[in-house]
Structures are given as structure tokens and as C-alpha cells.
Image (cartoon, rainbow over all chains, first blue to last red; front, side, top):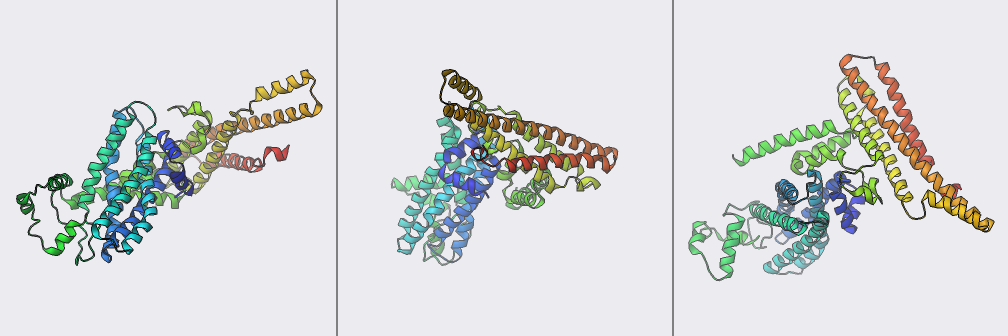
Length: 242
Length: 237
């Protein structure tokens, strides 16, 4: 792990992005970003898990980096193909270094926000406020990642389209990975916390169902069909936690 | 395919990537082992980088060299550094597991590669410095001539001459580094060929030992030159 790369990742994202684009120092950037990504996401996960405490701290500390790494592993070949198709036929290592640098920087932002989130939990905010605070932290970290990603794509035609395509693929894959690895934020009163929830459809199904619920349309039949209604109280508490 | 099957396949591919990374690495054994170990869980992200990073350019190679930033453009020195690294890797692979391994152990190859990288970086820095305004040799020379023709004060002419001399020394340092690296690249390539020949034809170790000694002498010379020239030019002048 290079402290120089770490400093540049935080202070000179444009420089790191240029290095990835021009295929310079990709090994050091990828390695440092990977370590930053795992450590930063693990600490943030631990803080998220601390809302309930106990085993959930370890579970979330393992699952958040796992979800992120799994997402990037699945997305990297797609990013490579998308970039090549949209006029940026770069080596695979450049694309991987760029997305790792973006994810590494976002994880460092999550790491920086962890103490503040921990303080909020300690002040006793409720479940929904905690979920909102965690989402805000993710949004800020995501902006930090997009900063490197867009700079890394460089000038030229198709830049915006490539960035949108990258983000679209990342959200689709990341959403499903995160959905599979639920729960992360769990209510304190939940007695038994599973490492993984039982399967209840996919991320897209959940988005569709939530969208309809938000519009006041409750699909009782589909909920019963998916087994939600038959879940015991403690598990449903966990189910609410995402 | 069940989750178990998928995990087994993932682990098998991870092991294959780890072996490939370890075998192709020119770094010292502990570092190569670390890089290989990282590939076991993270091969989809780490293996493409670790296996092809030798083709990536060093960080400061192009510092300040805006013309060279276009894709595909490479300076002769960076080409020489890449040749050295590739030849070292092939040389290490050629003698791995044979009686010749002691002549070019992995750690020694890593040391040579580090010295070459250092020299290449220094050359890039010198090139960048000499590309800046005020470091142009021709302009410095013309300035001295112009001051002499204009009948300027002796102090002004002496200052201009000192500047010209400093620029000349910087150019000489840059050119010497370029030559040294180019010669070293040829020598390491010859070493790789000889190691490969010795492995397949059973040549004597003494024959290979000679060229290894020559490589070490050049590398030591490169390192010594770098160390001695780290003194600022102003202090020397």
C-alpha cells in the first residue's frame, strides 16, 4: 500500500484519474485503492452494524466491502466493453484501476463519515433517521467516486454517455449484490440477526413493489405470495432493515 | 450450477491466477507471494492488473512531457526500462527451478528492476526540467553570445555563462542516463538469451556468470552515479 497514492487519491483525484487514463502506475493505484476500499467499507459497515450491536457489527463489516468488491468484479468487464464501444478502447488494467480508484476514494469518504454517523447513533436517532443518515453518507461518497470516474474518462465524444452507462451498470449490479447480502442496518430490538436474509425476489422486484407502495398501491397478493405475511415478527423486523 | 459449484470454480480460477502472478512476478519472493495471495479472493479485479502491470508506464516517465501523453507514444528510455523488465522476467522464468537459479535469483532481479526504474524516473524528471522555459541549451548559448556582443558587464556575462554551464551539465546527465539504460537493456537481454541457452543446451555456468557480473557492474555504476549526482547543481557550481 502506497501512502503517496493514498494522498493523491484524496488530494489530487484529477492526477489519479489521468494516471489511470494514460496507463501509468496502474498497479500501485489498483492495490492501494483495493485496500482502501476494503478497510473503509469495513469500518463503515461496522458502524452501520453498531445500530443494533452484537454480531451485526461483524456481519455488516464483512458484507459491505463484500458487496462492493463483488459489484466491481462483475462490473469491470462490462465497463471495459462499454468504454471500448464508446470510443475508449483502453487496457483492462486501466479500467479496473479507474473504477477501483473511484470506489477506493468513496470508501475513504465513508471512513471519514463513520465517526459522525456513529455519533448520531449514539445520540439515539431512530431507525428511519439512521437509514436516512447512512443513505446521505452513501450519496456523498458516491459523488466523490463520480468525480474520479468522470475525470478519468477524459475529454472527447461519448464521455457523458460512458459515465451514465458505467453508473447505470454499477447501480443495477450493486443493487442486486446489496439486496442479496441484506440486512445491514437492523433495529436494536431485533432478537436474532441472520447473516443473510432468505430470498425474496430480486432488487428490481423490490423497487417495483416499493414504488407501488409509495403510490398507495399495496400488492397484498404478491406479498403473501412471497411469504412476507407469514414471516415471524422478529424476522420481519430484520426484513424492514436494508 | 449451485452456489457450491460456483465457489469451487471461483477458487480454482483464483489459484490459477495466483500461480500465474507468482511465476510472472519480477519482485522479491515475499512481495510476489503477497501479490499472488491477494489474487486468491480478488482475482477478477487484481489478476488483470497484476499480470499486465509491467506494460503500464512508470508514474513520472511522462511528467511534463505533454507531447508524449498521446496514447502509444513512448520515449526511448522508457522503452529501454520496459525491455530490461521484460528481459529480467523472462530470465528469472528461464532459470527458475534449475541450477542457474542462483545466478539470477528473484530478489536480485527485483533489485535490478528497482535501480532501472529509479534511473528511468530520474531521466524523465531531467527531461521535464529541460523542457521548461529557461532551461533551453540553445537559448542559453545565444544569451551569452548576445551579452558578449552587446558589451555587457563582466558580471552579467559570467552569470549567463554559469547558467549555460549548468544547463549543459543537466543535458549531459540526461544523455548519460539514456545511454546507460540503453546499454543495460541490451546487456540484460543478452543475459536472458544466455540463461535460456544454458538451460536448454547445458552451457557452463561460468559462461553465464561473466555476463551476470557485467550486469551487476553496470547496475552498481547506475546506482552510484545516481547517488553521487543527487547533489543540487547550484551547490556543485
